[in-house]
Amino acid sequence: DTYCTFNHTEHPSHFGDDHPEAALFDVQVHLFLPANQNSLALRREIRNNLIEQDFTPPTIYNMSDSEGQHYVFECEFSEEYDA
Image 1: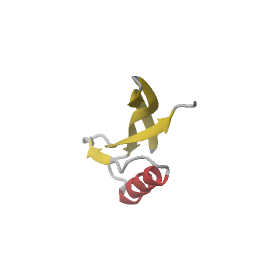
Image 2: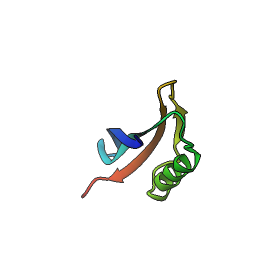
Image 3: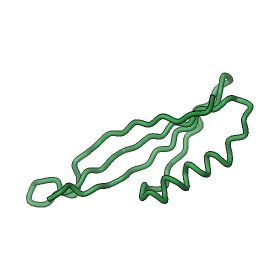
């Protein structure tokens, strides 16, 4: 009943001589849980893991409803293109 999904969008970034030198990823991690489960520790763990893996500190949106909890962690990640 508790699981995560994710999606991302890739954008060219860090232009030099009119060519991108890196990719910027807009990332969303979706956490789904039962309505009655305490999710605070898990939300903190996900946030800390994203930061430890060099994602920007996420903005967290509570999209929960009466049927269950749904939290969206929005963050970015940048990666240089291979030369």
